[in-house]
Length: 487
Ligand code: ADP
Ligand code: MG
Image 1 (spheres, rainbow, N blue to C red):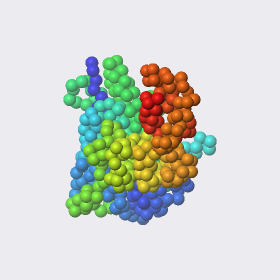
Image 2: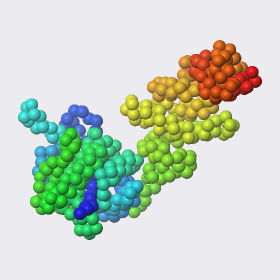
Image 3: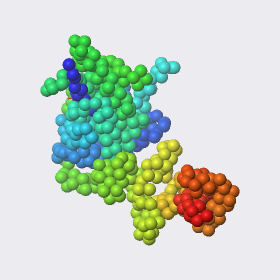
Image 4: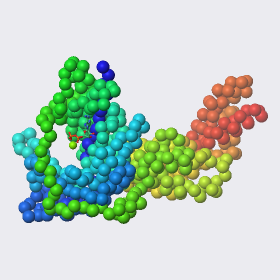
């Protein structure tokens, strides 16, 4: 029998607000010292009262709008009761019946994934278990940090789709500036629900939940592993147990954590310390109008407006700041485009796009830089592209110049002057060098004349050597052909 995998996701993301969800303590993910971003409210002291962080509400609504979701007029916080040492109040303020966001979709290449809901809650503290002293420690810096939870319908079918969905959501969270969504810092966490059903069946099978996965790749691996494991269970005549499993990325296998016996009773009830929210339609309209251009639209526009082909537009749009910077350079180049005759330049936007997804991205990755660290001004970047497009520097020299610009923020002409990298395009100088080389190498010259076209490359190479690599190779070719034919 063939089985069809059915997968739904629950994804948590910490919002990048200035302060915590219900108090004025800082929400600082880079705080290294434990228990400093805390106050009586997020420490759960008796007699304190929470106050709703408006910035967090706005950010979740922005996410909802970016997903094309409904923003209900009525929303409410609920109290979710459970005991755990990282939860100082003994309950978590969350949302149950009335989330901020309902519905929405994310489009994957293979299918459309429906979002069930997005709600807002508070994060817990962090427990550290120290084997040496056999003690556990708790850091409350994270307690009360705004946390959004997005739940999907069980619409996904493969590990690859899980990876694509996670990446698409991460990109949206960053575009609308709701979350930094850094998986390595635990700012985005994925739970995968997965079941199998016989191909063609309408009912879902029993699902297994894999919790706390901290990379999209691991999420995809975990799904593929579970599909194999559950297939074996079913083919062996067994039944899949409804359980929570963890993922061991070293062994590349999932392991049972606990068997689920019915659902937890969290005794949810409306949070009595907070008023329900009325989200006015005017506010929603304002937030919608203030949304940035989203990744899909940007990719489409880049293809249309700049004629950037294939995957290049997607790579440039992956990060909003990267794409914005690209357009700043494009606008810096407008004047140059207007004033430079067509025949003297390569298509500059295409060249610029290639530099962006090539050397520029490589240097950003190698140096682990963000766009904030970039020292090249858009003006200098544009000048650099113009110099390459006009053939003023060779491709080897271009790389040296660009590396220098990236490291120091210096302007390209300065580096070219300092390192003497200007490409020699002077016809007389090149002819002189070519004649010298031809005189020194009569044999390849004769070979070329007697029909061996390959001999020309050797001579071009010698001229490049003669000019210390600074000759314009196209011009050298032409000059050599002219000289050899007229000889
Ligand atoms: P629970 O009550 O166990 O929390 P929910 O109905 O709230 O389950 O769904 C939680 C997540 O599990 C959602 O992402 C949903 O799409 C997914 N899900 C629900 N049923 C299944 C199933 N049979 N197989 C796979 N995923 C499922
Ligand atoms: Mg649930």
